[in-house]
Amino acid sequence: MPTYRGGDDSLDAVLGRNIKVPSTDCHEGTIFITFIVEADGSVSNIRIFRGFTGGHGELFNEEALRVVGLLTDWIPGQCDGKNVPVQHIQAIKFRLSSNK
Image (cartoon, rainbow, N blue to C red; front, side, top):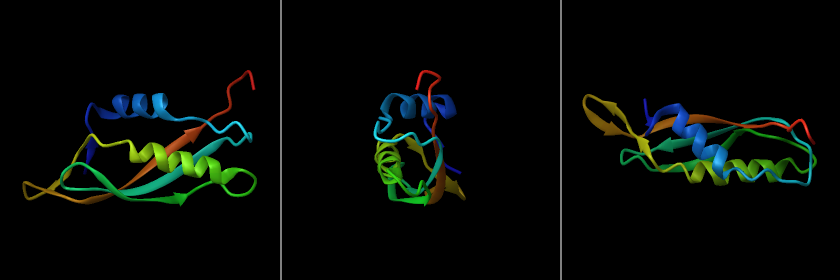
């Protein structure tokens, strides 16, 4: 299976630094994005697997897609010692802060 270079902590840090929460709504929850980690570690075919619906939910879906497109530092999956493309699902969590 592919892994993000630096592990989950590095992945969480990249997501945390880059997510811009749309200020037009108060959505809270998790969006699941599916994509392919290619044999060279790049990502392709980024799509919503399960996202927000209604209201301004599309703004959150679009932001999740944008941020996953920035995740370019993957160690690709391997099969028989060769790098191979692997489908991956990534959760993107949006939480309201206590002061909102």
